[in-house]
Amino acid sequence: MEAKAAPEWRVHASIGSILLLNTLTVKLAPAGPWGADSFTLGVFGLIGLAFLYTAWYRLTFKRKGLVPWMDLWENPKDSSRTVIVAGLAIIASAWLAGNVVEEALPKPTGLILTLVGLLTLLNGVYVYLSVGALSDLE
Image 1: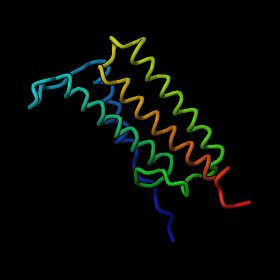
Image 2: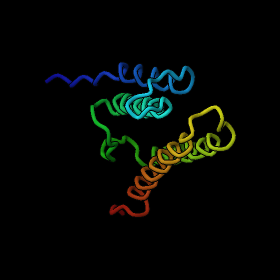
Image 3: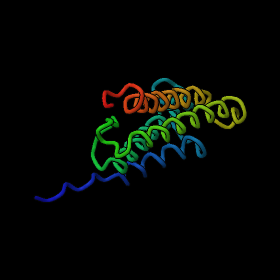
Image 4: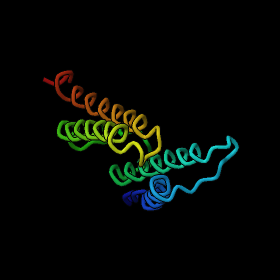
């Protein structure tokens, strides 16, 4: 029986990178039906982040999907610490985006980064507690 090939992730990474770079540097966007090119630019940025997340998921777990189930993690206890640190780093970058470099970024950048950081932190804490203090194994 042949091993199932990992799904392609490079296309998603390329599209996501192009959309995110456009949002942060070039800033090309039509006004759209709502008449605000800045809103369209934000939508492009969110879509770019979604593509980058999908590429990361496919590269990391070698399968299609979006939810990083604990069963997919090779070493949940150590990985959860890394995820917790990443969540805290994203929250710190949200503070920077909202205070230090506020003029260079779109207005809701800090809010979106805070949301992503808190979700990442929640996932890391959940996994850490599930394999540690709250696990059934003794």
